Image (cartoon, rainbow, N blue to C red; front, side, top):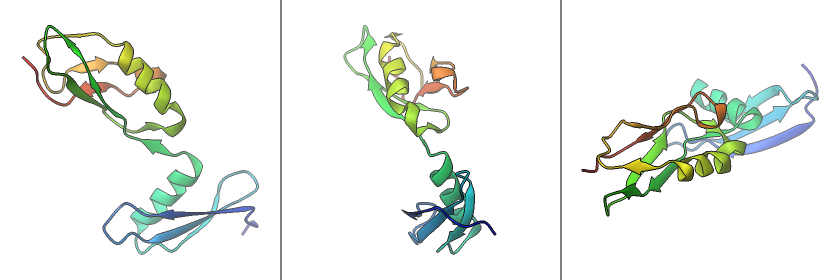
Length: 123
């Protein structure tokens, strides 16, 4: 086993238990060890969060021809460091009524391969 150079702690969000996870990273930034988890999902979550954190992005966008805005979200998590860029791409999108839930607002946001989709319909 390689020596850990950095230890990061997380509260697991995979289930209601909220385990306190510790992730030891090796010299190359890879995961050397995960402890504190009570299930495999917690270990997987901690490893991803320590090396390449991702988040779902949600926003509300105006719709031309409609007083009611439409809520949107990414169809999958995007890298955490791209969240501001994803929000900028969303705000640059122009929507016209009608918009149906599931409509793609931005197809390949910031080159991630993830779509931004409407989560509600507006007439």
